Amino acid sequence: KAGVTQTPRYLIKTRGQQVTLSCSPISGHRSVSWYQQTPGQGLQFLFEYFSETQRNKGNFPGRFSGRQFSNSRSEMNVSTLELGDSALYLCASTTGRVDETQYFGPGTRLLVL
Amino acid sequence: DQQVKQNSPSLSVQEGRISILNCDYTNSMFDYFLWYKKYPAEGPTFLISISSIKDKNEDGRFTVFLNKSAKHLSLHIVPSQPGDSAVYFCAADRSGGGADGLTFGKGTHLIIQP
Image 1 (cartoon, rainbow over the protein chains, first blue to last red):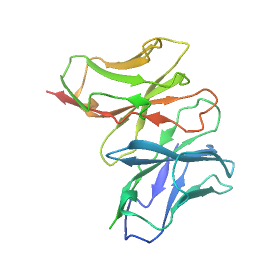
Image 2 (image 1 turned 90 degrees about the vertical axis):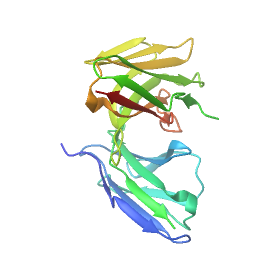
Image 3 (image 1 turned 30 degrees about the vertical axis):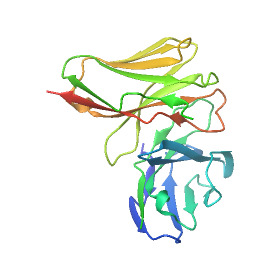
């Protein structure tokens, strides 16, 4: 079974631009969660989508948004990029059942200049 | 306020010996704990988990111990192998899926010396 895939793997943007990242979950998984990893803050939860609906949300500003499609693929969008948005963005998938292990993709490394 | 803490940023262990990675948490609502391993340029890989109804869970060379009263868990790797060199993250969750997703520690970089 193929794992979680994320595209692109690397991205360079400038301040003020917007960016869209994509995540394809493991086949059969309907829940996708997004995390931001930075050296200072570690791994922080952004949001979770299940069956095309945002089910949970972390403590990030409204510039961070996401959506999920009927095939469970998810996209994350960051508008008006700031230097501090430079990070590794990880997505993880599960079938959506409670207390199920999350399986992570390789991440998208975003650099904002 | 960090709810999950890994106080050792790095740990060096000789090959063949036991590696012990520690994790403390402050939120008493957490009742499900996981360990992930991460290599550079890759996403975290799930290693082992433990529910708060248990105090020990074992999977091959990996054992996780949970001390609820101390709000402390540890991951034991024995024997340690060179391929175990990676960053290890402790993560915690609440029953029913917490609204905050998984809460991670900042990681411990384990280095296995030959």
